[in-house]
Amino acid sequence: MTQATPETGTVTMYSTTWCGYCRRLKSQLDREGIAYTEVNIELEPEAASFVEQVNGGNQTVPTLLFPDGSSATNPSLAEVKQRLGV
Image (cartoon, rainbow, N blue to C red; front, top):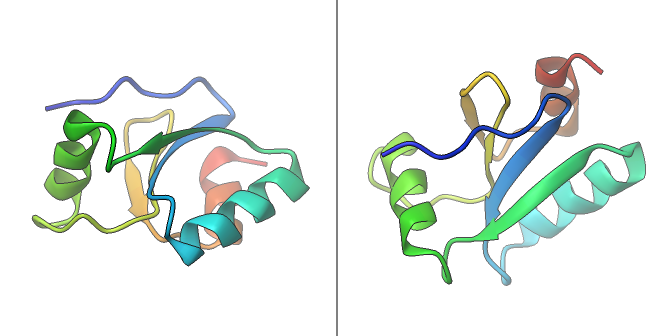
């Protein structure tokens, strides 16, 4: 299963409503002006399957999908910025 890759300079963030790490990363991205599309894996079964696929069967969030098709689980803001080239 593959997910549509985000546009250049943005990321797709797979999250849940109760995830503290997700809330923290979203606030950091907002502060830095980095655009993202949030997908709640509890409401989107295909998204949950994608997260499991890239995390060894686990629904670990936040999982980010980058424009190059790569993903990262619970990345730091510095890693997101480096991977986006900002």
